[in-house]
Length: 329
Image (cartoon, rainbow, N blue to C red; front, side, top):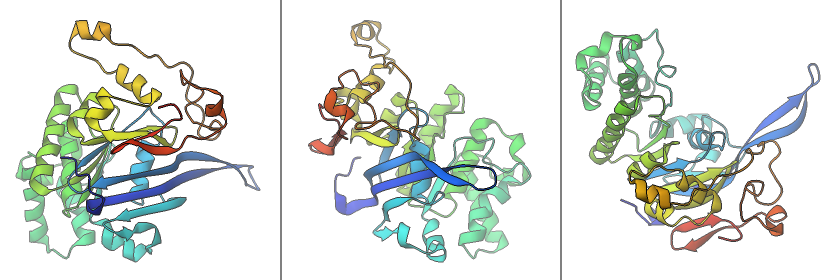
């Protein structure tokens, strides 16, 4: 359900940058460089859609999600949430908006406090953002457990008593506790067994249909992203390479990096798989502390020309709702 209407954009990210400073010296620390984790990124997330965010490890996907939620303070740029510029809000004002944005973390083992019961974990957002009494909180926690497919009587159990898939369901219940509009799913299935991954993704889709949620879905599994997403963003070394409808990205990728990613997606038909062109990228990803001049992808690009090493490509709309950052796309 792709909603191509800017008026209905829930989130607008404009020229977002997140740099992490690097210091040298033990006594007198000098700021010598920056890790350019996110470098001038712009996109929108429409109400009710799932925007998939893909790319290699270290490309800045998780940093984008955390910066949108202000878990990281942006270095520069603008983040509009339902028309509110989050970068201009003071801490108290941001707290009032925070209950409308939640996150499902990657590791269900590390993201749940082992010393807290399931009831305490899920009710933590309710303690901060609501004025419900003890009995109302317990009823809400039991309701949330039921929504995510767990026994409501598990409120007094601890995380170590659950499997990985069940723990991720607890993390989902915690994210839904304050009825958010936007949920950032930071690789929520990557640490789960393959048999459990489909169950969690189906649960996320059911919850989206039932509660009208909007997702930013960060993942490595390209076939899973195609399944759950409406549109897809492809990132490389802190920048967006391509953004389009999921089927356009898979069937008609324009950027050489996107083409290489899509050529690596397994196909169940052996004959079709043997006919597909396999694009093997050479070399390693450059350091985000010292990205290449011109296009970030020029050191590994099979079609790079002289201009690619001198001029940064413009991020432009090549076809309606299909954006790409490449001189020769």
